Length: 497
Ligand SMILES: Nc1ncnc2c1ncn2[C@@H]1O[C@H](COP(=O)(O)OP(=O)(O)O)[C@@H](O)[C@H]1O
Ligand SMILES: [Mg+2]
Image 1: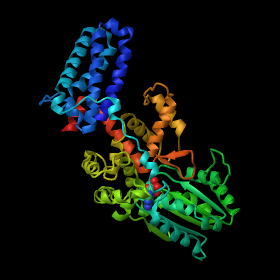
Image 2 (image 1 turned 180 degrees about the horizontal axis):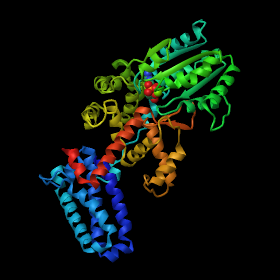
Image 3 (image 1 turned 45 degrees about the vertical axis):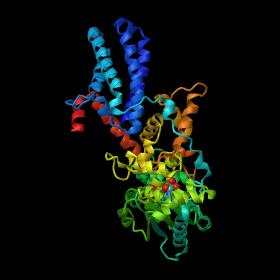
Image 4 (image 1 turned 90 degrees about the vertical axis):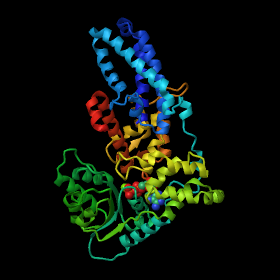
């Protein structure tokens, strides 16, 4: 929570700088007090950086040591301060309120020792370089032997079984982040698949995707066109005709949430086409594959502790560092245990560990990090995923949360996202660099941290994994609640009770 306030205080201090320079402040006779307020805000911002580092709850700090107060008096005053500014007749009151806020901030700053807080500047909170990531044993595409084995077996089922049925459905199931899409991708690019099928298509079916959109995806996948207002029957006709032209189709339906997309929409023209169709579905929901009558289901297993350690080790240590890796193995096992066998969790955790020294002492402290025990998030988002968010510098945190505004499975382009971040004011000016360049740097940092992933089919497109998107939106929601609290103190009482 301290990071939320840090960003808020920073923005507010910026607003004050502008306001102090304006005519209004002079007319209201509060220029000096506003300047003082601005200075206090800068001081508090440095304390909040330290609070963020030590995970001291911000409401505790801002409650201004008033034992009877459950709400933050400073925050309440901020909100009334904003409303005061809009109301010119209340000049006298405005001056008094600013003075009052100044006094409170001064008291908080003076009592910083009670919280063991130090003033940290921006440079002191910057994260170390992560160059180690580039020299690890594994390439980013290296996903372990298990995945290769599973993919090979699945391909043999897909192409090997000589049956009369023209259309057969195969499925890969498991919770988010387990590696379903990864297995499907391996299959999709397998040489046997290329030679066996005339046509192969990848359709990503996110939670809110309609049947119409799925049909349109297939149509554009086979380079055919349709009108925006085409009816279901017309679209199904185009799909059927374009498939009939080929002799066989391999179709991946990735991330399917409901069987009805197949049963009521895609399945009808594909079955009618009477060509050999093999569908590989990935889904979190077991009932989807039952409803679709899949003939073969592969349930993705969680990684064993040994495989988890192997995955982490291959990304953190070079071939020459076997001794160091062995030295850290015991602590490393404890760390990967917390990822509960989820490859996605290990992947983001590696990016955090890569920024730290590889010593027993540092890894021991890493296990004690408070972020492991955050309670306000659903199970699958807490632990490693939340810790990787916590590890981001303040500005990148805002940028990351912003990504949750894009619908699931949106393909993101670096320059588009960078421009949006700049226009939202998330990028801090730097002497010689263009804001867009800086924003693209932020984008690359999220990529390096695996909070953004490169789309395996398109080099220049990126995406947010479904679980990571849920993390970003859950945190954004907590922040919205926080700001709702600032403008309505009763809301805050309910939360802290
Ligand atoms: N066995 C594995 N070894 C290493 N990395 C893996 C493995 N399985 C998946 N991953 C990585 O974990 C991330 C999440 O996998 P993904 O296939 O998208 O999961 P799902 O589709 O089940 O949500 C991907 O970035 C992928 O590269
Ligand atoms: Mg997936």
